[in-house]
Length: 153
Image (tube, rainbow, N blue to C red; front, side, top):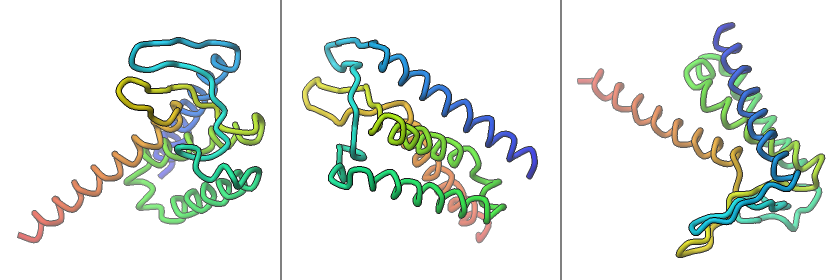
């Protein structure tokens, strides 16, 4: 369990630091315009696709509650945590980094804007890590289900 916690903390810290470093580059004026997508600073006061922006300042407190509930669940169920520490680290690091933005910048710093053939939501590295965590959870769940099915035979 101790080794798993150390790996979790290290991955969490690396993802959090990478995300905040990238965001600082955009806050300091970096931008790039491409044919398919652009890298440009956007402050998102909502969540994905700017949903729930009407919640204003309350959104960060809702996010604190959700992150706290996830962290509490993860650390309470030690076996589950040990089996899935990596996606939890990715998800919590991304969520905490975006939460920090809400507190110190008034919204989440987003910067990847897809604009070829269709307009897509502007997003950031933390969002990608959260999505990657979901994909890993699905993959791990399917693998576990397949393993259990094979054991039943």
